[in-house]
Image 1: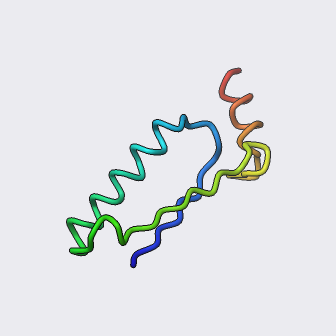
Image 2 (image 1 turned 30 degrees about the horizontal axis):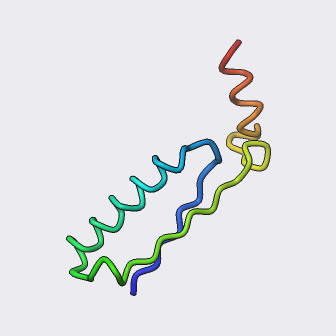
Image 3 (image 1 turned 90 degrees about the horizontal axis):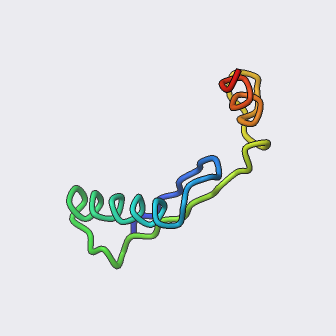
Length: 67
């Protein structure tokens, strides 16, 4: 049973996340030959203030991009 964990910053809609999980499921069905019922996918979302890249939180990066 393949288990996939996706870590990402918060902000996507439930529809976007469901679509992503369906696409990942289909990729595993196609490439690994498993049944869709065997695929488990979990999304771990982090608040933008709890995620950092290049020494700046995602909140700081968004603010800098607006300037």
